[in-house]
Amino acid sequence: MKYRERVIVRGGGDVASGTIHRLHQAGYQVMVLETKNPTAIRRTVAFSQAIFDGETVVEGTVARLCHNMEEAEEAFEKNKIPVVIDAKGEMIKRFKPEVVVDAILAKKNLGTTREMAQTVIALGPGFTAGNDVDVVIETNRGHDLARVIYKGQAEPNTGIPGDIAAFSKERVNHAPVAGVIRVIKDIDELVEKGEIMAEIDHQPVVAGVAGLIRGMIQNGTMVHKGMKIADVDPRGTIVNCHTISDKARAIGGSVLEVILHRQIR
Image 1 (cartoon, rainbow, N blue to C red):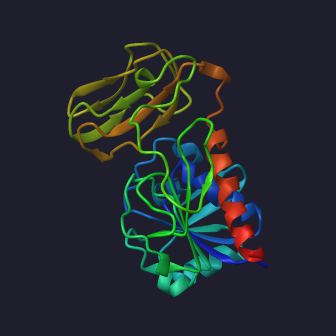
Image 2: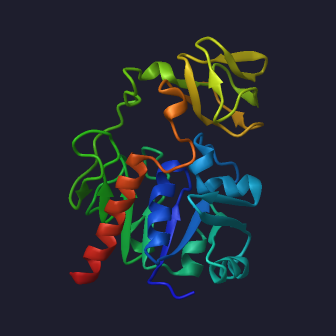
Image 3: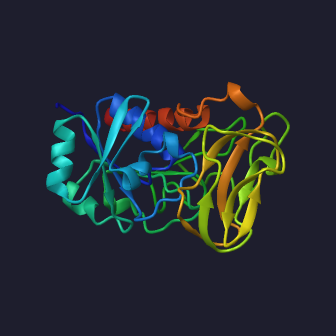
């Protein structure tokens, strides 16, 4: 395969995967760095799912779990995206990417610096463009979603989920206690309000609204109290759980814009 440039994306959740997919489709050689136990809930559209399954497919693009640089090179040869367990970013020095994208969405900087690559981009709050990274992309829904910020910060985290069909907090579930989750109803299944979707240490996790389960954390994950673990979409069967969201796609487009803009400056 012939690629444009090398890009490392830190994080492989559903929002990150919008960027990963877009850059891969545009011809960039993209490597994904993830934690040992990813906590994405929209797992059907998250390349991080390769950590659990060995391989995963998002909109026709295949990602493969790789354990070293040699396996990553084999994945590239087959036009697959390598996903490597590397929370500290140690592969950055080996891969030597032209671009690093921090798409962890931790709401704070977990160690990304401008020295990691020629261009360092961060998604969401917790970073200052022109200081610890070169560019920040706004991730908050609204008028400024996907805005490219060359100086300053993204909007602070509100902690309030976006409205869908007039529902906000009700559609998102957080762990009532710490423990290992046992999933009872998974992504793509319909639930009624009050129906049990999972259990954590014998404590039920119930749907706050009726609808389609759009996100559910991996079965068997150790979770902490208050952790986001599920998302029910009240629009029901009209929801597609297997395609990248409008938000993730918009953010991915802005990352691509930044990379192309850098090339003509």
